[in-house]
Image (cartoon, rainbow, N blue to C red; front, side):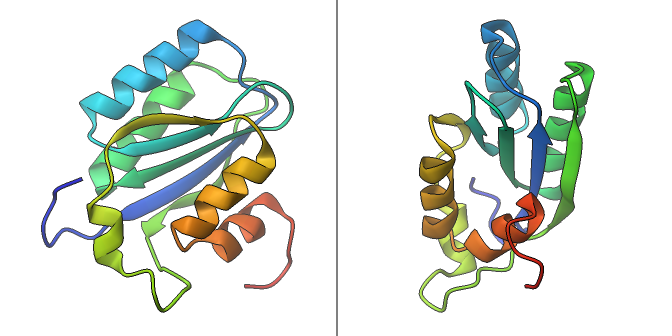
Length: 133
């Protein structure tokens, strides 16, 4: 993401599962088209999708997900500006990541990436793992 000065937005989607290779290919194309960073947890339940980019990019990528008609689709955290939770994770760190679609094989791996990106508490709240921010 090289949108200097533009605020970075993120969103979180939960589905029943993500197993279709065809759908993942479509999401990969959409991530490139809309210049967003997307992370999927695929395989078993739950299916988790994280997206980060410009406001338009995130909204367009969510639209691409909705058109694929995932079972039990929930936009659990609507697009909003990224608010890093750790002092050592700056907003500029989110600008220097590659765009595209990435896969986490487990919920633990997904949470580790959320921690690295400085949004672990936000993610836990969106997933319903914690009640308060």
